[in-house]
Length: 273
Image 1 (cartoon, rainbow, N blue to C red):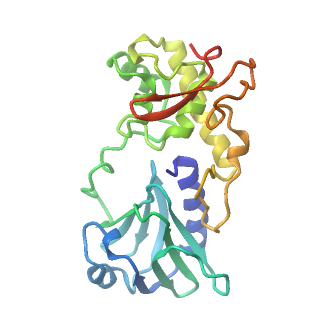
Image 2 (image 1 turned 120 degrees about the vertical axis):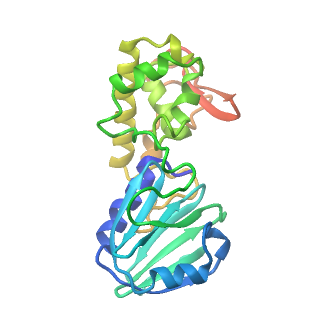
Image 3 (image 1 turned 90 degrees about the horizontal axis):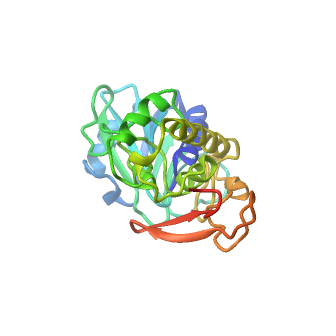
């Protein structure tokens, strides 16, 4: 599933390309992806409106318009937004196409698990999972002062805590494994056993791995492409994720892979305690 760096990579490109563009028509190839409206209502609401910006919270994208309603998008496993200026090759798995006054914006989704909602342009969206998001993992609000009291107040395992979007938004399996390795924390460690100093190290690690992912255009394991249709290359810089059975880049110990709460988890048994 695209995580914060992947979604932010898409957002930055799309915001640059479509802000100020008018929606002239919408082609809906798979209406069931629109979760709180019909294809017809979405067309009536958005056609003729101008896109004013593309923003992000956690793993969600919000396509703002100059009207009373905007479009909230969750990419899920294989979704992506791609801007096509015209004249390029046909993009496979096109599910919804926004024809703009210049070019087109394509919602592409191979496994068709994504979700799109019409939401008010101002105020709460009333979409479950969005209004309750915690601070982004790369935001100034994600600090030791924020996270340490929350860690001390729960007996959960740290990986489960970091995957909880109400605690910190935007993290998924890849960047949680990478952050915990960088911080030297085993994924199974109980939150209330983590000291303030270690919590600070964890915050720094989360900021660092997200910044690295952004710098490399996101991580492409299978299907992720950015807003231009290009793959990211952060997979070439991962330290533990996907490296089970290989030597740790720091100490040489074999990277282990386990299932934790149903999630594949990678860690170094020597570097992480």
